[in-house]
Length: 339
Image 1 (cartoon, rainbow, N blue to C red):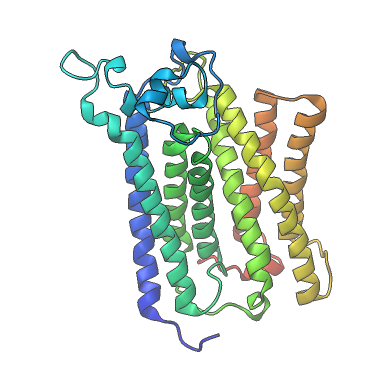
Image 2: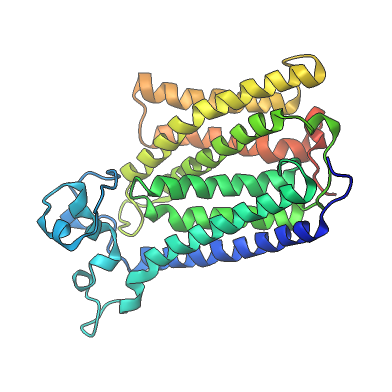
């Protein structure tokens, strides 16, 4: 552990966070334009087509788009406004201006730029202090927003989930803004208990799982607020599938994070479990997500009931990640919260 902090890298990290917020905001605006002016998500011609099909190689080619009659290659034009200019009435005859067809791709590009700036901010913060860059609440929230955007972008490489872009981008921008405004602390060394290789194992797993759970939570909130007559928002089946897939991936990672935390606690404090508030709420969160998966698998819960259960689990997650450190004490209170 270096005795001094590289203030130049620490300042660069703070500047990169501000750039990340701006890029995520611009991405949100682009995604919103895509939702507002793109083809409605539930156009009658697409009502019977499968949703969230994996993206096949060569999707979007003009020949494939015109020749397919139900496969994944032929549906790209229906999802991508750039491929349906005349179908929406673009141009002199009326409808949205031609430039709006690039709103969706621009949102994706801005999201990747913001993702890169978010990653660079974490790397420079870690290099500035010579440790893993999630030793306090500010750094953890920055990493969690990065994980949420990563979950969305990498899921988008396989599934057509661009319709969630505006909502994930605004969630990440608000999370980073909250971190900068209320949680920011100067870069520096951590307490001895955190100076361990376990921080790279336990906390990293918790961050990855949290990013996936945030994606599921955004989908669940949209599911509940979506009105039956809306054609601009994604359909409820699409939202439910995104949420379920994110939780199925995130739950075993969260399970590993809880187990790794117990092993770290035994190494640091000589016991696996001590009824610390963070430990309790991490386990409550695990139980809540396990209840959602159990209800889906055994009782066949789907739709609104399942979404309510997973949002209860999401609320437990948020309280565990932020609320415990702000409102409760315990052995995890060393994760600095200013004021």
